Image 1: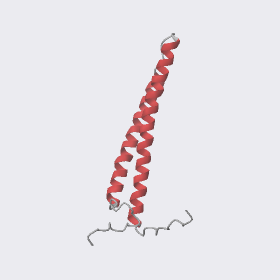
Image 2: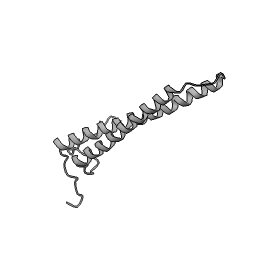
Image 3: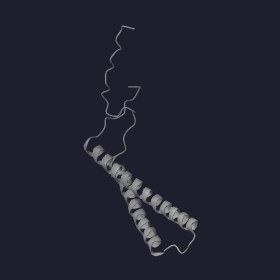
Image 4: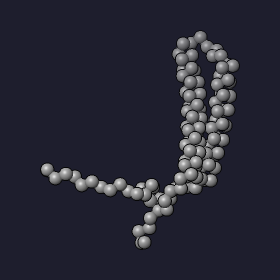
Length: 113
């Protein structure tokens, strides 16, 4: 119990999983696709929100109004969430592409060598 735990040497490899990172072109093309989808989803979200705003709820029943508001909020919120996710993916892939471009990772080690 009094023996200190051995200190392990940190790995000198920048990619500990041993897999090669994707190239910068692949990262940036993925970022372009995700950005395109984010822009398309933003346009869809804006269109859905303006469509809901232009059509008032035509009911006097309190339950119907509450359900309608909840469904509209759910639809716009889901669309906005998808827009945000694809936007963040685009930013992350672009950042990874820039990182790989300026700091190429070490080649994966081969166990046979």
